[in-house]
Length: 318
Image (cartoon, rainbow, N blue to C red):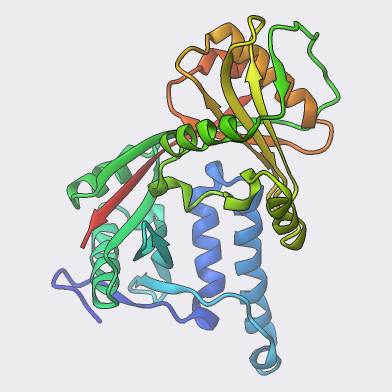
């Protein structure tokens, strides 16, 4: 189908398009791809090569990937733009996550991204979505301007901090102690947790509700679901609670740390807490924390974490 400006846009045909889509995503997002992103792209390319090299036998392969979305086709018949959509349920309503919006460098400034987004929004509305969501890196100002122009609301500014796997240990400053929280402290934590990680972003993280449960039933649930986690209350030298933390094992290239400081937590205390958390797990695997942008930046850096990037979480009601 053609737009009024003459652009050719059509739905994604997974078997036909997957190789070109993988190559386009890699080309456009190469500076920003983490190991999980590279694995996703490699999966696209592997599936595409199987179909290209063995089209008959690949018909019988059980593909675990079915892409929904749209592509732009240039005059030479090649894909030069793509947008994908993933169904999701957020705050008890159905929606779509819009992802992988990219246009080949030589085809930019022709309205392709705007056209792809228009098709994606119409698709989501036609399929009864209440809201669409996306994440955009703050380091890509043109994309941010596009989404603002399309009336997306900015819901949150987040930073992903990563401490790499390492044998390095910081000296124990004894400024912070970790204790196992009791039932009342757990209730306080849960209340604060949902303020630090609102539902509009929490659904798209590695969060599993049972990881914070206490008591025998919660432990049974974690065992049945093969969840591995540890949960801490953080106290300062005066035995005041300055926050909570939890570690969660994942299948990602990093395990997840959840961190919820109280308003009373100081920068010095946060540095000590982050160092201790990092030391507990960094010999096993890299750990990452998704945290509100601009808070305790110096503490993260002093504790050996590096910034993977800043992202803006956006949504649009349909």
